[in-house]
Image 1 (cartoon, rainbow, N blue to C red):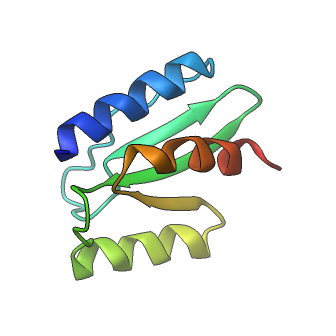
Image 2 (image 1 turned 120 degrees about the horizontal axis):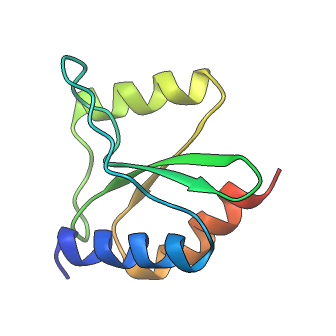
Length: 93
């Protein structure tokens, strides 16, 4: 399965959960996750979408760690089977 297909499934699942998953672009600050997931109740998480078995680049991993240090949830998604678990984690206080 291609990265774009996984990303489309994520967007659909987030929409079905009542949220949005806009593309997260940050000009001049490379390596940020692909999507910011915003769910009802003020729940937020960042999702890096990858093709199956692909890994984030070192700059992406550094950005993920920075976001985690700031208290945000960051996920690497490389299969549609992970989507439900990720959304459950984001919604759990």
